[in-house]
Length: 201
Length: 296
Image (cartoon, rainbow over all chains, first blue to last red; front, side, top):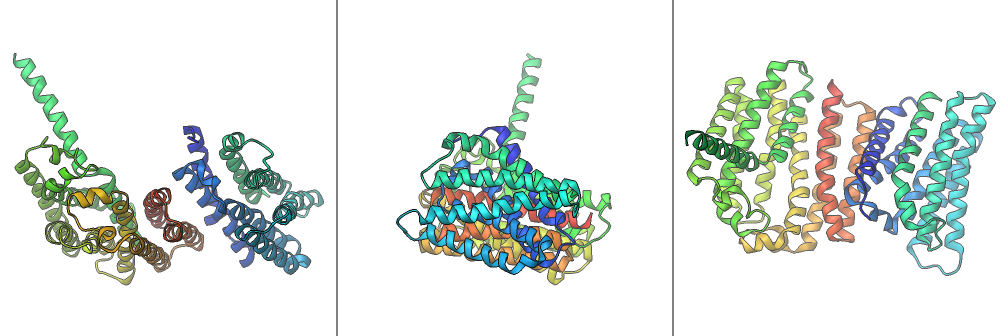
């Protein structure tokens, strides 16, 4: 599928925003959150760059399911590590196991519904963490109100990730053409909300 | 009649300028010039010393353009045999052979002479780049061995080393590491190119890695050189004193390069090949921009 000049501009803006976040937007955080956010925004950056170079067909690769899991998992780990000290270790363990489980169920043939189940559980928990945690923290006054933008971004990327994942599993929620048309805007909007949330929150 | 003759002369001049502009490969020359400027700025010398920057830009561009034109002149026979290059002005005879040689020599002499006048060490490195590119790479080795690309790589690494040496007044380990970064990046770029146009090179009897060692070894070489290029740029960035944020970003971009290098080794395809070729250019441009941003 060919993409338009507008799609290219959207992808380039995504690359620039993710570059900003990796290079300047996470300074001053602890070591693990910096690593986690670098992975999350790094994956967004490289993915946007590869889509820009190779076109939307990159999204047809089977690796996409695994890669689209890295973003919410690493973001969620960073957020939990920063704001829920009591759950740090258990959440990190969940993230590692979840990632390994998704990778395993996508690289070896496993019959039945377990690959879809593993994917839904991992995406679901990570997505809900990114969506709810910043909003709850904002309501409680523990962080500035605009930090809730990270949650809105989390909701968007969660939806995008689910669209892509279910498309790859052969049970699409939206048609492939529609997902491809929406993808550059969704990616930019998500990245912009994350960057703004971390910057002003 | 006189007006018609004058108009015809203007049209000829315009088409000649267009032909020579294409012969100096403006994008490639521009990227090499960018590495020279980044090398100079990496020395944290007064960045807004516009006089020096303008002189460096001008004489380095002239030297790079001169060596490119001389290469085109020397390779005009093999360029004519390859589909990718058969439309070049030198292959199609749109410009006169001796004139191309004269233009190449004039650009080179002015570029190198100006560089030597600016600073002897800087001028010597610029001259070395031109010598390795034209004499060692093109004239001596290109038609004899697939390993000629190493010398092409060394000549491509000279602008960044020259720029840094101009800024410092001497050659240091960071400058050499930056040069290694370019040296190892060049195979990532040229070997993917030689795989894509393997038949062209075969038709022109130019030995390449794919024709000499096969595709598997070529892909492995690309992967190894990508790893070394990324490692060199990160070490050089650390040596320059790059902020952690920029080093993180360089690390992320390097990871993308490595991922594509691994993909081309284990799951090769024309598409991944093209992706790596493009990504490698963006990677190097981004690395140079980071070096410049660091010191502004």
